[in-house]
Length: 164
Ligand code: SF4
Image 1 (cartoon, helix red, strand yellow):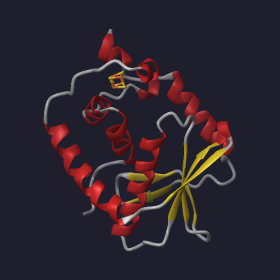
Image 2 (image 1 turned 135 degrees about the horizontal axis):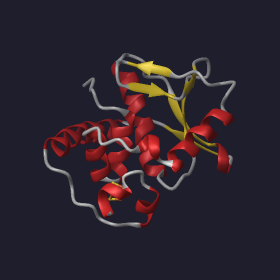
Image 3 (image 1 turned 60 degrees about the vertical axis):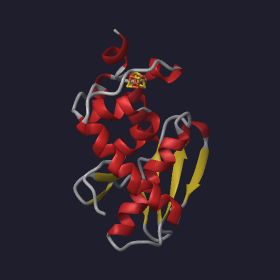
Image 4 (image 1 turned 90 degrees about the vertical axis):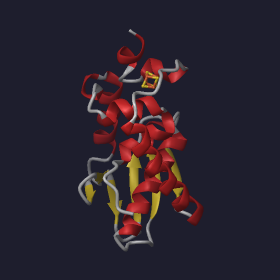
């Protein structure tokens, strides 16, 4: 099932359904967020030499890939949303598999923390991702999910949309 869903939408699905909805409806405040900007700076400074963004289909952009080692990489600033990051990378592996490339694994890189997390795609993950893709379609077709305040909201680019 090749989809038009982006890796960011998968990440937001696992983090906050309202964030997913706002992003999907182009209410994109991310360019204005200092936190997001910091993430981009860390990414650019840490991986200048390896940096080779890779496109899969029309909607997916991988941070970089080591084709010889068969590893795709996703670079993140903090591991507070590690579960969401893992699913984003699993989704990229899922899409690669849909294009007939099924022998890659993923690596999450947290340069600020000097931490690396290896990510594999299992049969159970494939099933789960197919449910998630359907659920994202359902969420985006409805009205915006209610804002529920939690600690990470303070650092979210949509904070003002939700609580001001
Ligand atoms: S501020 Fe909180 S509730 Fe609103 S989109 Fe961000 S994470 Fe979700």
